[in-house]
Image (cartoon, rainbow, N blue to C red; front, side, top):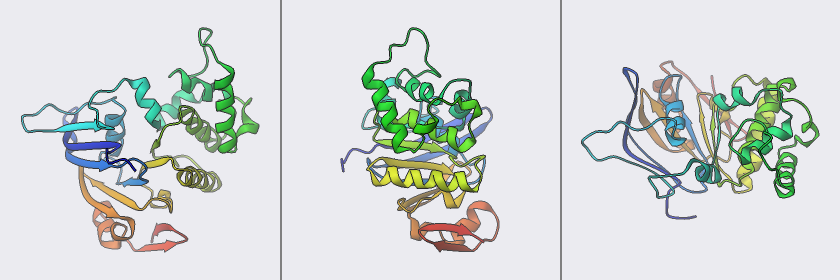
Length: 261
């Protein structure tokens, strides 16, 4: 594993309107790490996603701060997609249209939604897209329109879209939102498969069972600040989670997954 972090934030603050969404956050995630970032709604998790994807920028302030991806503080967005595949609910809404699953996956090569007449799809691109769809077990749906798919099927096509560049990591924002029990289980199994294949998984969620067994590190965010950061077995305990969510909970571990009671 490289000594250069995939993502490194030091003393980063983000302001959204009148509210401080991230408050002097310092966080480093290594290349190849599988990390869950857990917190209640409104704690700053999605802001962190938008910060890394360059949809939001840190507040300029007099004290030293920095934000680096793979050691660089400046990135071309197309180059960034080659390193870090983003799967967010914003992209989910944009990609659920009358395009086929294959078109949505291929559009990842162009940073678009769907294929346009000026896009030149090469045989190599199509081969890569079909290989990724096979990996995610959705090849049989390649001709179906995404607006006629279930939420779970469409979510997997969005992941496939992010994977066509061969990124070293995926960053997922609340990936099981709107999924039923079966689709949630299938998505977690797919993410475990990708993690075992060496693709880093960075998951932002408020749902404890989303933390797949391959994730050994958990970061807790509360009111824009990191409250805990460490090994999963140490962080996912009743005291820390009760404080995080503001209710008294008990924690149960079963088969590598954690649940609250």
